[in-house]
Image 1: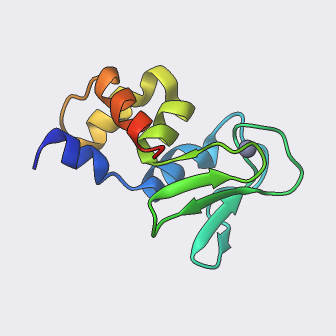
Image 2 (image 1 turned 120 degrees about the vertical axis):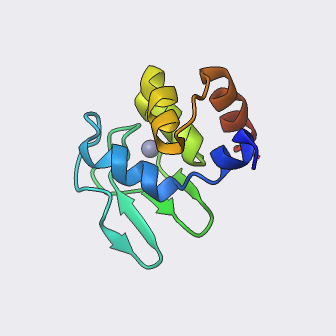
Length: 111
Ligand SMILES: [Zn+2]
């Protein structure tokens, strides 16, 4: 397993549970509100009254139908934790991960 493989195996649901439940800019219910196979909550990236932010564990992705923000676990970590993302991910993997590597893979997650 390479570091890249390890990074790609991080689960969006783990990141969401770790980060979004207390995410300061998140307005509304915790991420654990189940919606079929997915989870939904108010979006942490834009203001809204009805939840349009979904965590999709099977696809390992998140998407907001309100603002269009979407991606995988690394993108979610980068957007929410910003400069703390490398430390968070490094602790999760037990390996030191650079911001550059996270950015590189988070960009590729968009496709
Ligand atoms: Zn949004």
